[in-house]
Structure formats: C-alpha cells, structure tokens
Image 1 (cartoon, helix red, strand yellow):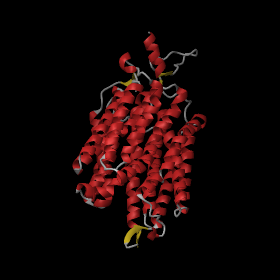
Image 2 (spheres, one colour):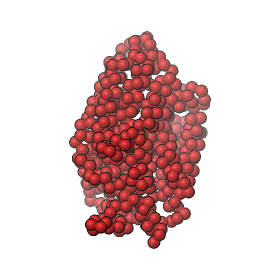
Image 3 (cartoon, rainbow, N blue to C red):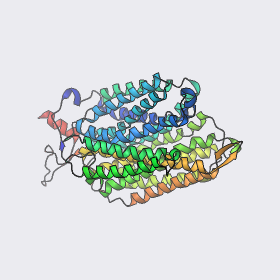
Image 4 (tube, helix red, strand yellow):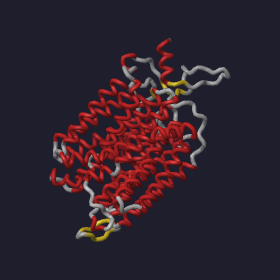
Length: 507
C-alpha cells in the first residue's frame, strides 16, 4: 500500500526535545500496562466496597480486556492514517477520563465504564512502536522498539505490588487519582518531547471493517472470559462462539474487497506475518500464566502443604524482579536481533520461557525458588516481546506499522484471555479441602506450569517455521517513495523518514 508524505507543519511536526522521545514513550507504555492489572488485588474486596456481586466485580478486568482488544488494532490503523502522535495523545486523554471516573465513584456501573476507557488506552504501545520506527535512525530502532514492547510485561510486574501497597495502606480510590495525574503528566511529556510522524497511509478509514473486527472480537472474548461462569456448553457461550466465527468470515470477505481495509489480510496472510502473530498469541498465553498463578500460589495458606501464607504485598513483590529483568534484557534482545535476526531472538525467548516453567514445576515450596522461576519466565518474555515487533516490521510496509503492531498486540491479548480461562478451569477443578476450605492442589499449579511450557514450546516450533528474513533495509524507512533517491546502480534507495523530512524542509 503506498504511503503519502504530506508537506510538514513546522509547528506540529517537530517537538522541542525529540531526543527524550524513547524514554517518554516507554514511560507511557508502562503506565498503560499498569492500568491493566491495577485492580487485581482489589477484586476480592469490590463486593463489600461497592455492594456489587462477585460476577459484576469480575467485569472490572473483563471489560478492560475487551476494549483493549477492540481499540488496539483500530487506533493503530487510525494512527497510520491521521497521525500517530495525535492518536496516542487521544488515547492518553481517554485513560485520564477513565481514571477520574473510577476515582470519583463507588458505583459498579461507573467503575466498569471507567475501566473500559482505561483499557482502550492499550493502543499507546503499538502507536509508540510506530513512532519510533518512523523517527529514529535505523541503528537505534531495534533497541528502542525492544524497550517499548517490553513495557507491557514491565507494567504487569510493577502494577500488582504497587496496587497491593495502595489497597493495604490507603483509600482504594487513591490509586485511580494517582493514575489520572500520571496520565496528565504523560500527555504533557508527549506533546513536549515526541514529534509527529509525517508518514500517512492514503485512503479512507474502513469503518465497516472496524465494526466487523470489533464485533468478532467481542463475541470471542466474551465467550472465553465468561465461559467458566456461564458453562462452556451453555447457549450463551456456544452462541457467542458461533457468532464470532460467522462475523469473522463475513468481515474477512469484506476486507478482501475494499481498497483500504482495516486489516490488510493479504499482508497478514504472508507466512512472515501470520506465523509471527501465532507466536505472539502463544507467548501471550505462556507469559500470563506466570502473572496469574504466582501471587495466588504464595498466598495459599500453609495448611495446603505448599502455600506460604504470604500477604498481598509480598505476593505482588514476587513478580517485581521479573519486571527489573525485563528492563535489563530489552537491549540484550535488541543486540541479539541485530546480530542474528529477530527470529533467533524469539526462538531463544520461547526456550527460556519453557525452561522457566520446568524450574517452577520442581521448585514450588520455597519463596526464593518460586521468585527465581518466575523471573526466568519473565526474562524469556522480555526477549520475546522485544523480538515480536521487529518481526512484524520486517514483514509489513512502513505505512502499515501501526495497524500491524496493533494486530500483534491484539494476538497477545487473545492469548492472555485464553490463558486466564484455562488457568481458572484447572484451579477450579483440581482441588482438595485444606484447613476447612477448598483450595487448588499443588498438582493443579503444576498442570498450569506444564500447559504454559507447552505453549512456549509451540511458540518455538512456530518460530522455527518462520521464513528467513530478507536483508534489513533499516527500520523506519520509506520504500518506494517519490522522495527516495536512486542509487548508483539505478535501484531505489530506502530512506529514513527523518531524512525525508529534512529533504522536504530544505526544498
């Protein structure tokens, strides 16, 4: 699909301090990722605090998953067409609005609405990746994108202990006020430091395609996340799954006919892109199991024979070393990708995740060994999350970076949804009575570890099937642009977007 590079508005295209853009965008990604997990420690207390039923309280997590899944690819596409920084700022405004709604009310309906708005801001991550590809020189793109992508895991690791500290020591509305204030700081920093990319995708926004994709995702994710409560063979669950298939088929047929589709299925069907997205789904599944079971496992009472009876704060802190490793390893992943290719990085990552779950399978009785196993899994996730965007960018035109990375992020979210349903089913069905209450057995947790390790190994197999990468032409390039100069052999030379901008300014 051709890319359009319009004349530049110097007042908006250049930010005063673009050299800080990487740090600012990464900070935005961490804040948005924290929002996805911030209510998890609060969930058991929501019925008493709001008068809501436990089923209604669970929607504080479910609705965030739904809106994040729907808006991430849609806003990625909008950013490609109308300006990535503009859409990123709008996403942060929505995050602030959702935080304020949650901060001022204890009504479950208002809280669910606020959480829905917070979930929509997940699009910040693929939009940030797209801006970095457009703005940075090629030699800096891999490391910057690696850090930006890792913020999803970093935020998840940081969010649980921070939220637990707030819940135990302050009024629970405080964490939403704090998130709202940080969101405002994010907006100011983006406007100050992040330039608007001049790169645009031509054509009209595919509203019908966006609605079709949204409908299919909502039906699928509702069935997956609520199936355990409704019954996997109930009319609601099977009806939603059937509707998801029918809507997806109709949507796919429509997308193949329109000139500027919401998702370019022909590009997405290329083995390099399709297999990367399948690997993203499996990695998302494998990673999320680590977050779901670690805190719960160490909080189990000592009467179970394996539980440590840890507090909410201690259980959340078990994931913090993993978050630190994700920050430390993102540049390492970038160096591996630069030297050997992102396919090698992703294969190594999948192997490390599987090894981490093997460690967890045999070391589930001692706190420091549990932390060690969880950190190994997080380390593999850091490498994987850094490699996935590089693989996506290798397979799609530069003008479709936002939509393609949004779709890849969506696949991770779908993997997390399936993981959540699988973990809930295993822990609810392999139980025993300990200390007068029903609890999952140690074997239940070990089954979860084996399933997650299997997902990681499946991701490894998919990665090995990826086609060899073509010669790297520099992330953040405009290929085939009328502004690209011709090399001495008569071929078209690729050109960093920043160089295109400077060429236009000097003209």
